[in-house]
Length: 254
Image (cartoon, rainbow, N blue to C red; front, side):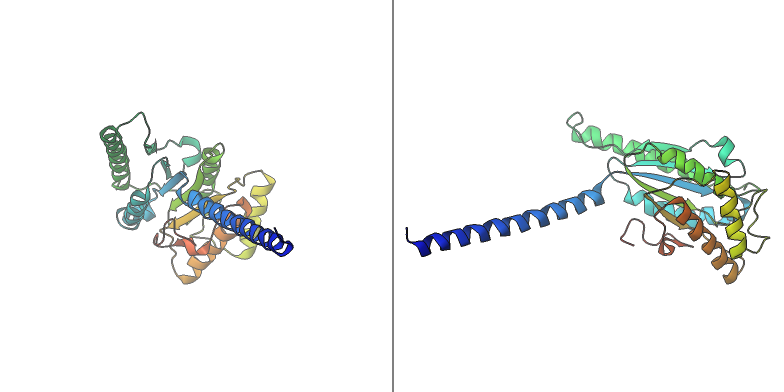
């Protein structure tokens, strides 16, 4: 083989190897992104049961749940609990189930039957919860987030927290409806809860809020500002694009 032929052969070989390497990297990146999208999730939904959300439970909260329900996929864990004045003390989930996965141990008919039964159970329990007409006098959202910390602690699935609430904290310590939620007030709450080791660890938890409200635009914005600051301290994946009156884009890029 002539020298120029050897050089040409080496050049073609190197070009092929480089191209193959780039193709492999892009394919791996694509597969990883697809795997992230399809990775089973632990979806925790907290439902505000206070009297101020009686109407929202029958409208906004139900619409939000319908979107979550339609988005459920194999391997997801869905846990539904309530926000009341005694959430932290008496917490007991209304729903805590895993969506069945296809396997070699289940034929198609068995799998579809199990899937239908599981989803029907979720629907029945949530319908019962959202039909509750008598609201509780308090809204203990802050301590409910500590429950979320406990639930997510050993979860290997992708973590999603959905809060169906007007986000008006109403507890013995803090009443956002009666008090002006200023920057100084926000700082005092965060400082106190940090000093008493009360800020939960919500690292890698993607947060959605539906049902957020306020007596007027200023109250709405000040309460939203509080939660943006607080979620930042918890390490959660929080965006104001996922905070609002309605659950608009559940589990879409945001």
